[in-house]
Length: 507
Image: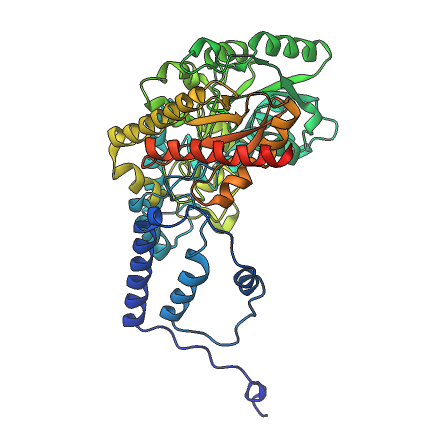
């Protein structure tokens, strides 16, 4: 009988790259990355992509055959690196996007070359991740036991994991096994955060089946937008929080979670952790609410001695979300979750299929038992490099420099006759608006709604907008320690010039 496989037409596979081709390709990639990082400040902060170039990327056909690594890198340099977001430039103030640290960029290449799954097992990235998580806890002063935390894809995932653990604990105490029975018929849970809490909090509440109506909005204490006036700082109104919790308990609901911010994304406001912790009770305490701190952006601000006191009580939280890919300048894709009790994560998420059992392995189990992800990227090496290249002292110095530059921006805004601060400045975020004397509130709001785009299109600086207390604002975030006084002076000049032109065109 003839071999049926002989009639099949199987395309020949592309030849594997030679050792020389791999080496040359990696060196070329390193050279391109170095040239890109070295030339950032000399290029425009941002420029719109030509439609032809955008279409070339969007409509690129699936290739039938392969191409040499060098050719691919040349195309990537022309079509991708040439049109960056802009967040490596010292005059970039948009969102909360950092300039990558060169050591972390280099370590990321090594992590990709190794390419393990960091779910668990006996390989170097597992103990390295546990060490890096400990470093993060030590940097921000959070109590740590080995295994009490893990790296995630970002603070959004860290928040989902934290809320999932809080949900599991609260319902278990209420006599309900949510892992077995789900939420149908379960006690009604309620959670608490201010309107300035990051959107990932609501997403987590929704995705975990609790429902956004269970998320109570706690009012904020109001404050004056005066530079250096710490007493005017806004933040969660703790008495209002206490009243909401009491109302829900009297209605038969189960309050289970309070989310506090260690630097909100709109203004960098820090909630009063010590007071909130008193309301919640001790971490893991019977009957207490789970206190989760969103420190994705701002928790590392505790390293700046001028604002360290504002973080009193943060260490009393049950969990803390961090984003090394923000203020620590790790390339994007790395968040972290720290918890007071590692078993709170393992009891909520551990599920070990037979093909992953390791009876003689680490007593802590696999990292994948502490969260949602199974196959996990090797995130620890870039974080390790970013911290190790500077040490605690260097990281603290970089963060303090960002905060001082933001204070200088706030001083310049306060001095300008046609600008005004929209909120107190606590960290490295400055919310302000163009407000020419004589313009009506409606005219001011119309100008500020479109002012960020106008500044971006001028090309000298990049800033984004937001809405704070119902009004449009410019929102400048300083995450790059290379950003200096000359760059914030430039931003102020651009805001004033673009604002005046917009106002003249609208009247």
